[in-house]
Length: 262
Image 1 (cartoon, rainbow, N blue to C red):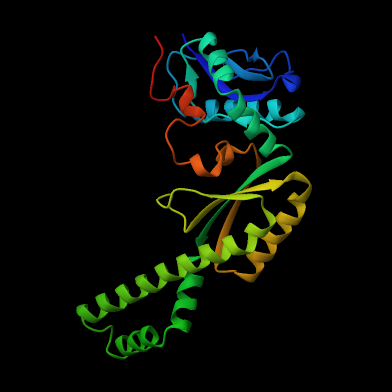
Image 2: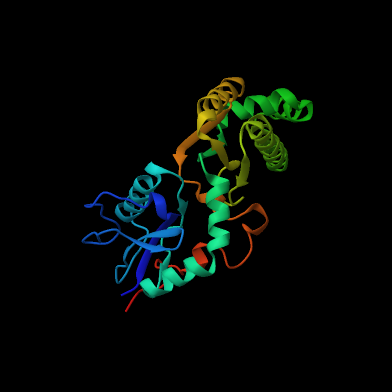
């Protein structure tokens, strides 16, 4: 049985509720492994682990508790090591790196914002902004719908205009909120959203940041915004230059979601 790793904290803030439970069925008791100035929040790893809602929430709950007393360097769901000794060895080996990240993230929280278009509203905007699309749509209506070729051409023109608007709106969202954040991390472009941005925000500035989100929403009613936060700074656990590189913090331990334990 391996060791499941939730996150890394400074040893001085490693106190946790004694009855805190983590992932697994039944849930595994959470414990602390100390090494020098660092400590890892861990539990025994289940034999098999999949990203079910119960375990995802348990992972989040442990990180919330660990971060209540200060900054926590969160590991992604499914981060594991073969045993406790491997965890403490990684803490010793990467101590400088972990301590630098803890210092950089101290007093911050992550806010994830996803954006999509209200389909009807953005179509009105596209029609208003493009004379050629509006003219072709009018011609098709007057012709009883137009030929199949004309309808296909209109659909292609609308789709291209909407795609262009998606890129514009994603950039507008970034420009409006980035000045109030310490860092910004973009999610996968294949996420199904026109924008999926995570902002690293100083906790004292959180209210001002959320006020700016509300103002942006009012100024752009054709956009639907989903805000999630405050969160542990998942998207900023690695320094900017190495977020896409191999050998990240979570990779130091492996992934239980794809590697069952014997």
